Length: 79
Image 1 (cartoon, rainbow, N blue to C red):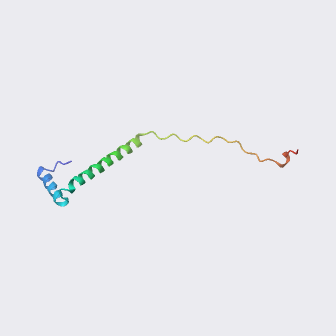
Image 2: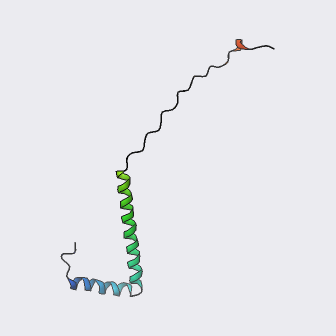
Image 3: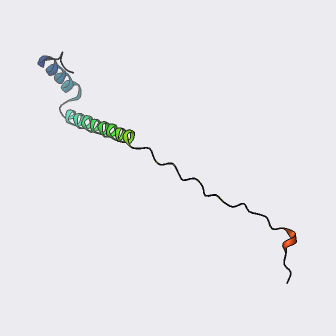
């Protein structure tokens, strides 16, 4: 990945970062960068485990219900 970078290139890059952000901000930037890389890796692992998980089982079919017959007017009982 860094095959074309020599030690001189890396040192020049670090000096420019130091001049731009200052000595107090560099540790904060490094910590934030580390946390963001960790979150990214965690998200990638979660996505891979979801992709490899078996699909959820389909819901069971609804139970067959008996048709309801409305009461007829001729079936009334008299007391």
